[in-house]
Image (cartoon, rainbow, N blue to C red; front, side, top):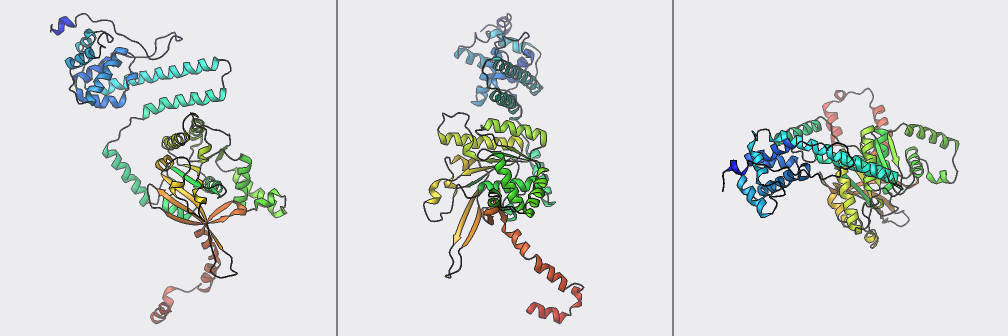
Length: 497
């Protein structure tokens, strides 16, 4: 083989074929060929930096087609455990018949002829990624302009696709963040410290026993609330949304794909004011009822609660609405009614695959926005095949992937307990079954179902209310008595009783 100096003395022109259609642009798209050469040279000088660089850069981040091809081979050599040096790289390029496509051996020689160092490899890679991001933004903007100028363009659809393109670019910028064990441990200890102080990031549901199981609805989590039609899953979802927005003053977004906003408002008023919805529909309201309606409506009008009842929303549209509200109002909870009514992005996919993709993207959205997503879902008919069959995870309708992607799965169940004595009425009980809880225990939460008010209430809370009168009487009877006013014998006798 001839000496490197003679072989590399006459470099061929660089092949700078861009991935994007930039024919409509007057200027050359942003790029930095010198930074790209520095990245490739760093990888050849010190193969260990390849692991750091591949976290930051993809192949299409390189503007130069030649550099893009070389980067691809260096990545593959590293991933297969092959040693990396100049001659092995050239041999690989010859075997793949790409040596001429990159500008010949002279191009590789040019990379190593400069005064390059691998010490600043990460800095070089960040420059390359920055230029790539600018090119992607230009490409997205150009695509939007072309579509906007085309006749018959659906404006609403274009808006959502444009938003999706922008957020996809943002995702690429943040998807390769790696944390050290020290950072992870410090974060975990800070979280434990907050818990010890009585602080946590979970959003309380208003159901005491349920919050004991879940420690609230936690950010980043997908919570599925499932039941058969008519069991009250929408009512429970709205009860939780109402408690978060009105009692905790935290912004909530309700995506209603089944009911119109007016119907949801009616449910909220009846539930909050404990007004019989049937009496409203039949116009049997009294003067006191109207006063209660006015009071409740005024209270609720101040709550940070937002509704979107647009039918046929896609997951991309739901994500766009949620992102906008997160940025504008610091959104804390998303409630979706319900999962299988979300229009799939690709209607040609099999139904189970559509539902699986939707559930997976909802989970990603929860992590992206750092909020819990409470999504309602249907159970299949197997729960009705036997007498009062208790729902299980296997009854989730249309896709087992819902169970896999969900952090928490709640199932609603109404059970009739037959009276043992003739003449006594049967007892109806309602349960929220915590069927899956990734961060805690599973179990049963008994609740009270007030059908006329379309409201669930916590059993524990109702029990406390019933004992308020007793507590007041106890305090009155023993007012003025101190604990040390009893003699030792009297105190012992009280314990014996």
